[in-house]
Image (cartoon, rainbow, N blue to C red; front, side, top):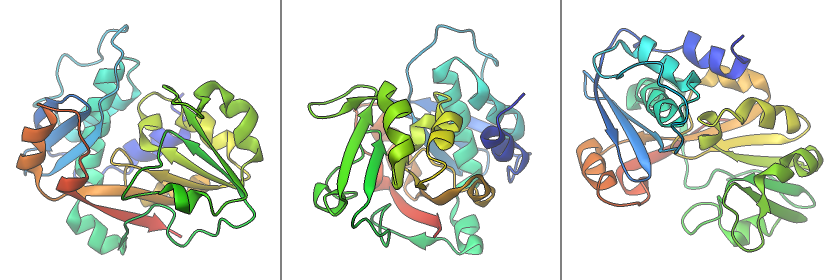
Length: 244
């Protein structure tokens, strides 16, 4: 049985007949380019202990290649997520959906007096700043590779149910933790954020307040950059928000 989160993504995929022209595996990001040039990106997530579902995604219709997001080979799942984002996160769709440009995933979210949880180390200059997070009564960070002060991600079972607001990295789509994280956050206002997030409005029916993802605006420059260094893709995209 496919969890609802992934079923929604695969059932509502636009332009699924388009073929995947290229898969680019970078240092920190994986990109997929469709035959019409539309490009999607996802966090490059390590883990190849399981065999691939597909020998390659290149040449497959996007609707087939997108199913790689279900793979337990996380590097293949990264490719599948990038294909999904190449279909969902396009300027044409964003305009039609009425998504709004944003420079912060928490813009307009009331934090005063609330407990705020981050799944992923999402506090950084130019996005969600430490000063913004400090408006909450308290906040904590759950991280798979914790830095000083962070909680290990296994603490999610204990801490997330007590959150009023939860901000979840889109990379949780790839490692398959997203369905459980949403269950743990069912009493919270949930924001999914990061370049890996698919701007699929049907996901909001799962109790998600907003999706904060990106549209790649400089694909060739981004593709050239991600293969040579570990860096942010923010310079090559614009961030948009769907939801409240």
